[in-house]
Amino acid sequence: MILNKLSYSKFRSGFKLKDKEIDYINNKGLDVIRNHAYDFITKRLSPAVIVNDGKQTPMRGHPVFIAQHATATCCRGCLEKWHHISKNRKLAKDEITYIVNVIMEWIKRQLNDNSKKKNTN
Image (tube, rainbow, N blue to C red; front, top):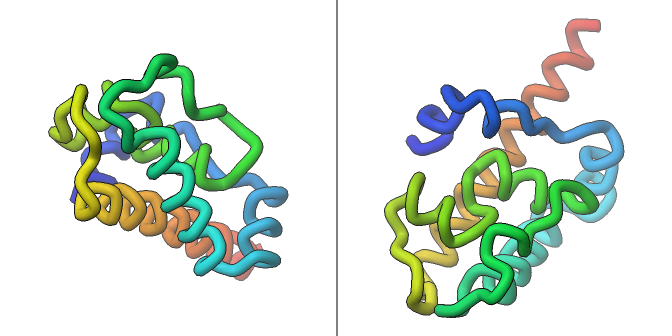
């Protein structure tokens, strides 16, 4: 899977959810986070032309933003490089679903890793 490939990138593998983001996810629930991801991807990545491509995804402020950078789903350039989803065209519904699924899988792995750390301490 793409997440295994991304784990070899020093930049991508440096992103981790902190306690604040984990608490946010636990308070909202994964379904709400998934809805946020769909909303962010549809509004920020889906259009064919994005004026500020490469700068539209903040580095912090929401677990999905952090996940987007970790999964190379933060801009159309990264989507093209890592996921082979070409730029300069509107994203198809199945591509949006794929992107959201990658983001959510990364978030679930982060939650699982965090849970394991807490259980060993």
